Length: 516
Image (cartoon, rainbow, N blue to C red; front, side, top):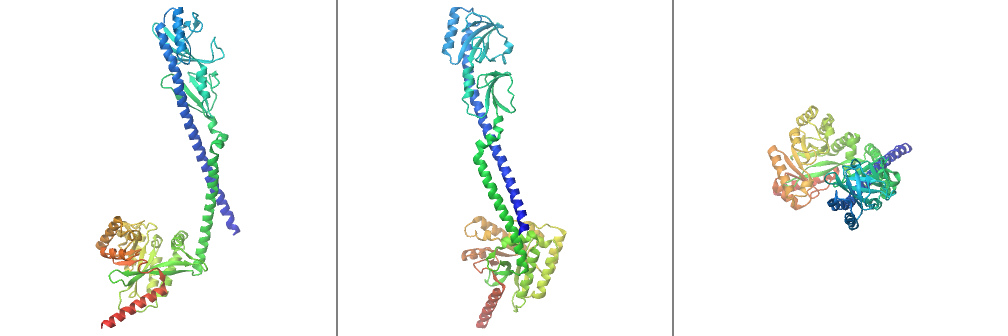
């Protein structure tokens, strides 16, 4: 047991690590995507608000355009100042000729040099300040008119960076005009010096809103925004690793128990009778393995048969089926009846070598073919390839008059390709279709299709999972030749099956004698 614990512990740690790292990576990606999308939405909103302010500046410049080239008289100044007072966000309107401002609502008729090349796309200029407010940033909107005249509308930077201040985000936002950036503190810089940014360009004016998203990728931000996800990741990592370790331990334990059960003969063959649909007499049965551990309940065949196929013990289980069934049935002695069919389940593994032929020969040495005929039921769990070896095994079986049946036909791998490969003597209708024959038209169509195919191939049809009178009557009317299901009999030990046969034979003999 000590040797077993370390691998389980190591596996447990590995599963926890993989799930934990994967979960953290997904949570981090989710947080990053969420914050980045949130930032993009904030960029769009900020751009719209800045566009609204610049729209006021554009309006002011258009109002002042009617005075472009005019002399800077008191009446002109008065009109321009009236527009400044009436239009929100605008700090000043200035008239310029070529590269010189000659009329401003702030200073009146004074001259200032201006270079149109400084304006981004000839429209916008971002400044850290001017003579009036040297420590207060502003943005200038330029409206170029005719004959070298232009109107410049100044917007106080307060209205712009206040938009950035109102954004509730881990990221730092900037307004970019050309190669200049205004921060939320109103400071204009020429380089950001940040590693990762995203931006939103304006479709109306030559500016962008830029966000520094470096803070999105920090561990503290991850903890702050994703603590609940991290807690869930830890919980599911622990839970999954625990369940996986329990499963592996269970599989290891079950594997050991299976080997032990085979050695101690705890697995024995049972049989579920198959009945002739015409007279409802026993026509044979299907051999089923039952595993009963001492002092415990039966272990479901679906569990240990699949495990046996995976670990290779299916070979021993198949031998148990044939050998123990032969030992039980060799004592039978009756004459004058059609041989009963004894169905054994086989899978893809049995067609990879000729061991199945040896088992059939062993069975025939103990049990007379005049009393019982072997039927190999090909299960649908694994694909059986049409190889030369498979064809040789099938041909040898047919030479021995071993019948073949396709189990659960129409489901899994038991499809029409198997009909060609095996040329079966029986087609077995899966209980999934049998259970729906009363009310499900699709099930009825499928069953009719299988029966029609079987008739054309000369196959008998076994319907498994028959559970009531209505199903029996409908299936018989549709052409089913044999029944198998709890309505007729549950799986029983082989000695009980012998008793059932003896009672049936005795009843038939008494009926014949009474008739005579």
